[in-house]
Each structure stands twice: as C-alpha cells, then as structure tokens.
Image (cartoon, rainbow over all chains, first blue to last red):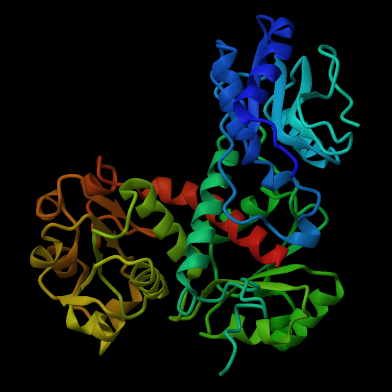
Length: 144
Length: 316
C-alpha cells in the first residue's frame, strides 16, 4: 500500500520553500475549492500581511461549452488591489494548466499584477507529490 | 408523465419559462450563481467571457424599459452579442406569425431568445419549436408568469433576510393581473417560506388564490402585522376604468403603503416593488424613499440574476 504524505507536513515544506521568496509586494490567492484550503494554511504559516484572496474560476473556464456552468460557484473575493502585486496563485493540484490559465484571465480583470506564480500542493504531470512551485519568482510565469 | 418543458432529459434547466414546477434545487442553484455574479457586477471590469460568440435576441412584443435593459446589460456582461427587436415596427405588424419570426431569427444563428409577450404561454410555444441548442427565457407573458422578476425578488429577500424558513411575506395590491405575484408566490412556497399573505380588495384578488398556499387579507393593517417583507404591486391605471376600483384616492387610502401602515410590520421589514411604481397610488414617497425600501437594490440584483439564468440555460 502506498503511504500518503502527511498534509500538514507538506504544507510546512511548501511554506519553507516559499518563505525566502516573499517580499513586500507579495499577496496570496487560493483557488476554490482545493486550493482555498491549502492557501489558508500557507497564508497562516507564512504570516502574510495582506489578507488572503479567494477565487472561483467558474465564469472563466474553457470547458463551459462542453460542461455547462459549474454548480454552486463561489463568489471571488480579493480584498486587496492586485495592481503591482507579486501574486502567489495557490491550487491543490497542477495538471494541465487550464485552471491556472482561467485564473490568470480572471485576475487580470481585477488589475495588472507585477507577477503571478502558480503554487500547487502536487503536480500530477511530474508525479511529484509535493511542492510544485511552477514558475520563477519574479518575473511572471508561463504556466506550461 | 409529461416532461417539464423547461428541463432537459438530465433534469437540468434548458429554458426558463415559469417558476412554477421548478424544483427547489434549481431555484437555489440560480440564486447561488447570481450571488457570485453580484461580485462581478461590483468590479471595475464587469464582464466575464462565458457567452462569448453567443447571440441573445431580445423579443419584446410588449413595451418594457427596466426588464429589457437589465437583460441587455446582463447579456453584455456575459460577453454575448445582443440584438434588440422592436416588434411593433417589425414583420409581426406585417402579418408574420410568431413562430415564423422565431424561425427567421433561428436562421440567423440565435442562441437565446428573451421573450416578453402579452399572451400567456407564448414563450412555451416558442420553446416547443426551437432547436435543441436554442434557449428561451420568459421575460413576462400575459398574466401568467415573470420568472426572472420572481427570482430577483427571491434573491433580494434572501440577501436581506438570509433564510426563508421563518419569514412572513405580504404581497399587496393587484394580484389578479400580476404575473410578478404569481411567480413570487410559487418561488416562496417552493423555498419554504412558512407564511405568504396576499392583501387587496376582493376585485383584485384571483378567485381561489388560497389554493396557491397563501392567506388572504382584505384589511391591509391586519395583513401587514408582523411581516418581514412587504411586496407592493403596481396598480395599473386601466383597472380604474373597468369598475374594479372606485378611484386612485380611495385605493391609496385603503391599500397604499404609508409609514403609518408600515409601522405594523416588523421593525426591520423590507419594502419591495417590481416597478414602475405609482407614487401616491400604491406607495407613499416617504416609504419608497425611506430606510425600509430596497426597491433600487432590486434593480441592481436583477442584472446578476439574469446573468445567472442565461449562463445556466446556455450551458445545458
């Protein structure tokens, strides 16, 4: 039986990886639903100054014409001005990059961030189980 | 058993024709989705890309300013292309049938028809004849239904009162001719509001209205007692001519909402009106412009609710 890594330990490792890269312009946004939980933990572990933003990308998904509107979309809440910010975009899993792309499209309707760095608890493509920091930081990522 | 004409085979909303017959889950889905769209309408960029490339045809066979405009804004905020048809000067006045008009618009690759019509059931007729990828939204048909107005009323009530399960709601005035009242009553009973009252003179209440699950009051003061929500209906001036009512002054005395009458409702009661309102006939200006009034927020919420309805039906 495969032993799953402990979630709390994963969060601490991810936080340790992110900590040295944070600056005065850093701010965090979690993506509903899985990323919201992870972002809340990371935001607290990193004791970030700006309040946490939460985003639901239901209105920006590229599969709307096949799947229709997702049920029960949550209201996106970004309690800070994103312009000029270095945004950490947190999701639970990084797979095809479609979610991140949709999130970036939504984010740009709120303002013009200095950079966007996707952060994920796991990356399915590389089969890594922890700490996928998908971009350099800064500049803005190319979420391939 | 005949299938609900609003739902597809998977039980999802394909057309919005009437609140009557819609399950609670779908009403809740629309209200929840509208809540998220309300966030979009507060942003600086009030647009999302969901209906990019889709065409929405506003078919208004009856005049309307508020409903048509809010549908247009909602469709534009969803990135759809909107075409407004002024039916009074179009082919219908040259004798074209309703279904021929729709078939021609369908040939222009319509995706959503927003229909207001003086005859009850017209949107149902259109929905039965459109192609599978086309969707019909009823924007008011005859005396029958006005589902998006009913939904925005429900959204407004939930916004201010959070929960339907302990509410007493009074609907006051010309219930007989009101498609808004009918839609709202169905919505409130489906979502579990325990007490819905209708208040009005006998001549303006439909016979057997109790069968909809409402309590009837002819004395407005008695009916308003301890209400959480007061919904005023527009008194159409043409009703005066039909001998249904003696005069506007007499009506205002008995059924016009004044601060004095409103004081019988709960202290935190909200006052709603679907518009357009007749000040001094069904509502006094001191109430319409007062702290209990949520009449203008209703209009704003209407955009988010119509965005929710269009994006749900077009995706199913």
